[in-house]
Length: 506
Image (cartoon, rainbow, N blue to C red; front, side):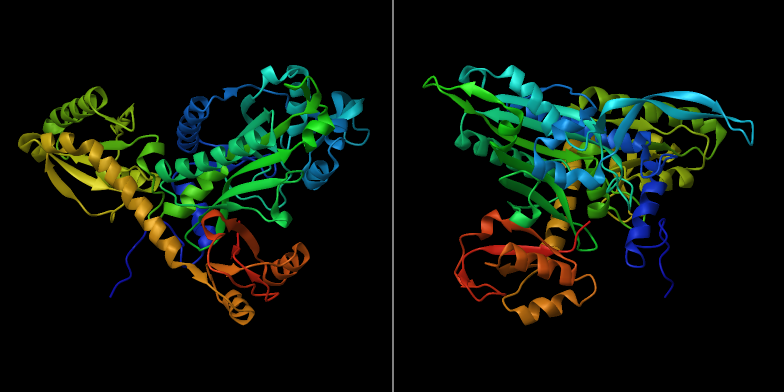
């Protein structure tokens, strides 16, 4: 039996990392740039980010947060004020040391070259994250408990000098949002931390069709300087984990370092309690690895730059105009009369002078949720040829035009649910419960072993030793797994109700 042909080579099974790169290339999402470790996000990839940004931004504002913007350059002395935080990012920092260039002629070649000049009295770090510079602003903005809570979000770029870059997953410069809040009490700050944690989980499920495990990071995996880090962990198709978003309770550590104080209700000066939280363009990498197949990208409808693409099929010149007019009429009707998830449906008519097959496969590779093919016979019969991206590329349904319109919103919702159900089943089938150290060791000797959950009461040192030995990490202590039956820790034998999820990750 002949092996089926796929649009992407190699397939996921043959070479998952290379398949990932080829999906991005085939979908025309991004490319490596001349700046080492950085990427150019092309319009289709950036359109996905804009949809992510728009939805999250509305969720943040609905919970009382406001957007602001802070400097890209952070004085080195600001980072030094919070030692644990600075140390956590020290090896990833890009540092600006000069403020101008001067032209010099090379004595050997005679060519002009530009050399840094004007050394700064204090170096600046290109922000790896903004806790310190935002904390300095908060110290100016907060005087009384009446100024709290302070709920700020920033959409920005950051830089972390990545040694092994991979498009969207790990690049030196990437885009993100970072929320920073200040509160009167520990209790209020922890409520904020947990609320954002749930917001991220809801967003991933409702918009990206990605199920996540919600949990807390161990001390070894916690954000530098935080007292608590909550995470949402996603499983992708090679059974590895991706940290898809984090929310941190920072206690008063940053407030003390940045002197963020307020006069409380009892007229005493005290330090605020702060939080920070963020997601980045890594979400796009997660989306690709969670849903794409061997024919290319597969997009949930809410983040698809175009949710429907109409492909005119014009085999004869004499019927071409009628077909194009019909396609435009269908597109205009959809834009005018139909919506999905509270927004007008995005629809595009592909009028380019290419064959129908070429167009079809381009949009398959780009992951468009619904493709419509309209030919002369379809114009006459008032039918549309419907192709769904969550189904095999050559599967077609011929539907009456009015029936298609009536079911359109439900069809997009059905595609989302189909992707979510598929990803949920895959994740659940690849999480194994293990209760002995022997089985734990055997598990990690397998290829693509998936995640495991174990009883855990080990120390930080013991966790780090196991992690190093098997090239794994505790992804989280799952929130819904911390009050189960008591069992013996796989390493120490200590009875515990706590469970840990372990996995290999990106």
